Amino acid sequence: MSYNIDSITIIAQNEFTISESNFANISEDECPESWEFETSADLIEHTKGGSFPWHGEWSGRSFDKLKEVLSLFTGSADMVLIWEGGDSTSGLRVVDGQVTEHKVLFTLGEQT
Image 1 (cartoon, rainbow, N blue to C red):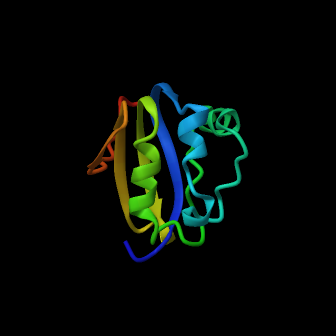
Image 2 (image 1 turned 90 degrees about the vertical axis):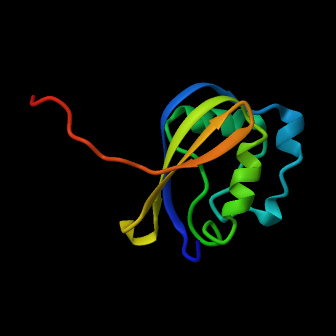
């Protein structure tokens, strides 16, 4: 992708975590401006809030690096990526270090 990611929302997760040793292997130089974590605990706490911190400047050009970082996680997470301007979405699923890309489908549920 040639443009940046506006946001990544975690729509489902189960024991989604990263070890301190795997976290230490992430080079901040290859991460976008939103990557500002000093420990794996800080990052895990952030993801529990329902978002993944990969957006802003350099986030689109480092999409392969994002998938590499996600491969360091255990557990599972389904994520929806909103690309710059909101005109495009994509999905990522992480299951014990395996990262796959998915189409995103929007549907309405039962009438309230």
